[in-house]
Every structure is written in C-alpha cells, then in structure tokens.
Amino acid sequence: MIKLASLCFAFVATAATAQPTPPTPPAAPTAAPPMRGGAFMPMNPSIEAMNTAIAKLNDETAKPLTGDADHNFATRLAPLSQANIDIAEAELKYGTDAKLKQQAGRIIAAAQREITVAQAWLAKHTPGPGKTPAPGGPQWK
Image (tube, rainbow, N blue to C red; front, side, top):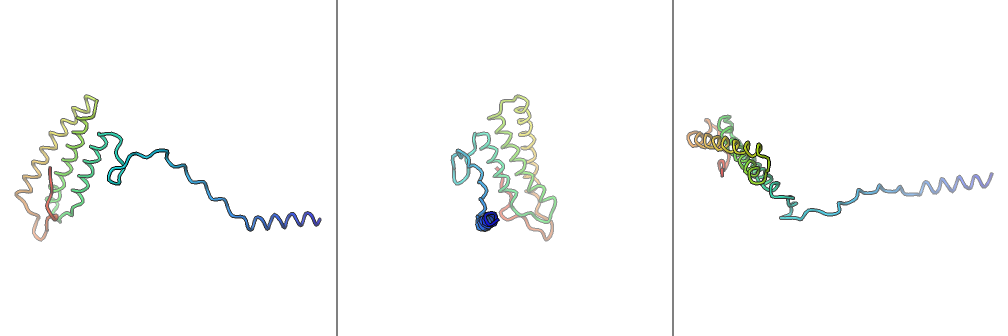
C-alpha cells in the first residue's frame, strides 16, 4: 500500500511540475523566390506586367474623390481603363490563346475610347459648386 501511495505521489508531483510540450511549428518553405526592392519577385514576366498594372491602378484610385458623382466617375474611369489596357497588353505579349488575344485587342480599343471620353469631359468640367477635385488631379498614361 505504501508503494502504491509513493507511486501516486511521484506521478502527481511530476505532472504538476512538468512543462507542456510546445506545438511543433510548421515547416519553413525550402526556398523563397528572389527578392527585389524588399518584395518577392514574380515568377514570370506576365505576372510582373499584371502586378505593375494593378499597382498603378491602386495608386490612382487612392486619390481622394470629390462630392461630385460625375467628376468622380470620369476621374476613376481613365485609370480603370488604363489598367484594362495594361493587362490586355500583357495578354497580347505573353498569352498563347488566340481567342483571349483577340479579346485583349477589343479590350484595348474600348478602353482607349473610354479614356478619351473621360479626358475630354474632365477638360470641360470642374467639380460641382463647393466641391474640390482630388489633389494633383488624375494622372493618365
């Protein structure tokens, strides 16, 4: 009986002082892509072209808008259309599917028309009364 009590005491004492085993961290990737300017370099030129188009779009659409819906629409239309052109140009340059390349050509033509319309409208219009344009104005390619 004494042996059993000693064993129980030893087990309880060990369990109370034992530290839990920390979880095993996930395995680290074996190799990371090369770095450029602190960011991961894309795996191929088509990805780089599309990422550049999206980064330009993000820069342009980060500018503050006015309270004028028409001015906001025209101000946002050009950079959105330019992003469509840039992405479609990447498809023409790097893509291999004939139907997608044909669609990319149509997208470029339509987006160029949209930019022309937006720029012409903005050249003739200022934001409505009491409304101010985005600082620096829209920037287009």
